[in-house]
Amino acid sequence: MVTVDSRPVVVGADGSEAALDAVTWAAREAALRHVTLRIVHAFAWPMLNVPTVLWQEGQEAAMHAHAELVLAEAEKVARSVAPALDISTEVVTEMALPLLLTASRHAAYVVVGTSGVGALADAVAGSPTVELVAKSHAPVVVVRGTPSPDRAEGLVVVGVDGSPQSATAVEVGTKEAALRGGRLMVVHVGRHGPAARLRRMLARTPADLTLTDRALTGWRREYPDLPVEERVATGHPAGVLVDLSDRASLVVVGTRGRGGFTGMLLGSTSQALLHHARCPVIVVAHRQGEAQ
Image (cartoon, rainbow, N blue to C red; front, side, top):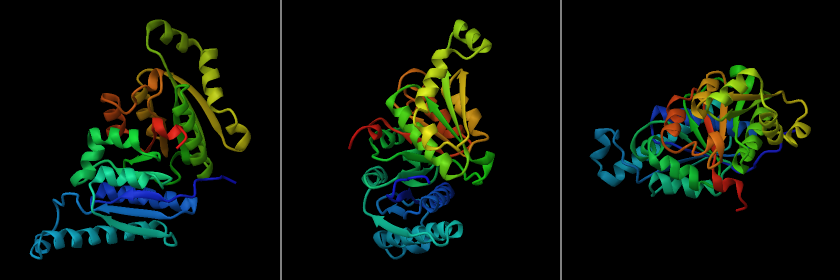
């Protein structure tokens, strides 16, 4: 039996298709975990797509009416994939980033889409995402579309670099693969350089194998029936993970590690992963591996 966090899965809704994709993923995840799905909407987000007729009632009333419509649609989508799910909805007078950070204190995951309208779109597309990941008290899930639950037999890919954060990512990925009755792939991306490339073309090095073996210490015993694959690759970490995401249900990474995954969600590497990954990405930040 898989032991999972009993706290709710929190998802941000802003009325966009991307946010509804995030709601769909979050609803399935909450159902797998048998926990509450909490759908939140920030009353202070700029509502660029509020129907004109609603503005006739005044700005505040229009935004409140729109918020209720957004939540009703999000709950309808969640019910369509998990009819018996315990769902709570909440409108908060707050901006997107503070809302999600506050919600993360009592969440198993914070889930967002990759594009949309208003401040949630900005939070995912730009630097606020880095802040969300760095400050969140829960892993952040960035949903790019909604792959079918049985895609690639529930393959969960985890990037490791030997850091405490990647060890936490392995824990998250292992439990996700076990929940889905799927399989786990633990990937280490080696250093660049002609000598390193030649060495890895010939064979995986003992150090690489030791790193992936260490990452799996204990988890093989806890989940003896879970199929596990260790893989050593060379190249750019984001490129390797994007390629693997084409057949994965999830990609899980840590941040602020060392080696190939250093700064995974900072700069161009983050943009490549967030904008080109072909499955949802779970990000475990630095502070999530620490005692809270």
